Amino acid sequence: MKPFDLNLLRTLDAVLSTGSVTAAAERLHLSVPATSHALARARRLLGDPLLVRAGRRLVPTPRAEALRPQ
Image (cartoon, rainbow, N blue to C red; front, side, top):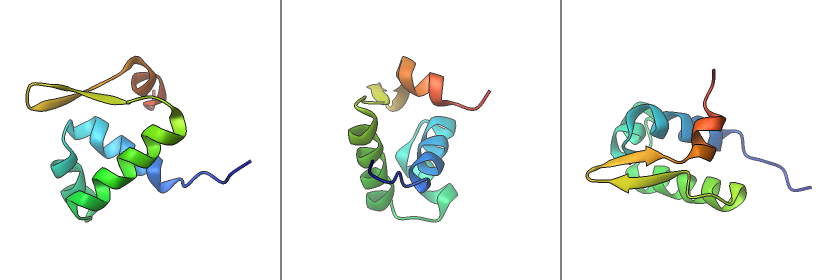
């Protein structure tokens, strides 16, 4: 089994909370490209788009909602 980078969960949480890769990058003190790349890695690892565009915001998929903390 390939190790899972737990920082991807931190990035996903920030993007889910803010609804924006840019805002999540600011919150995490990362660049926008680094945050976008981490989100892409999480999408590949989990086999789900996790967030989809709805206008100017990102809306979580049902799978992403299930990953959110209770």
